[in-house]
Image (tube, rainbow, N blue to C red; front, side, top):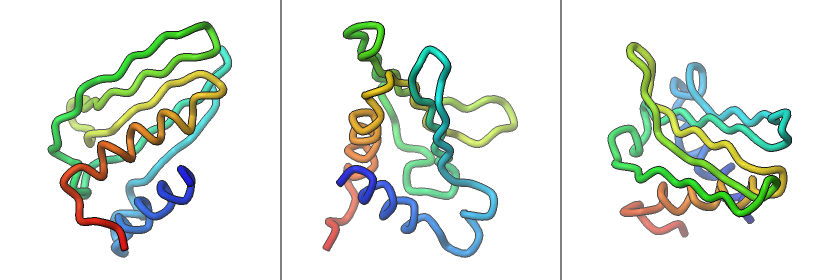
Length: 105
């Protein structure tokens, strides 16, 4: 379900332009874990406030979400999480993205 919701969010951003310069990148970390970058420019989330999330339960059970913007770079949501926390982290992103959004049919 999480992956399906992420796919729907991504498709909703695709307007013939956005997907050529921006998107979602998922990679692995070597500690082990996951790294996700979600471009917010050109989306309804570009200026939405975000409260950083940091949860550290154990060496393999952790997650960190934050919105960053480096000078001259677009605003992005960054996710770093443990090897079994990818769905949980994406669910947090999707819950934030759904705030004040029209209901999905």
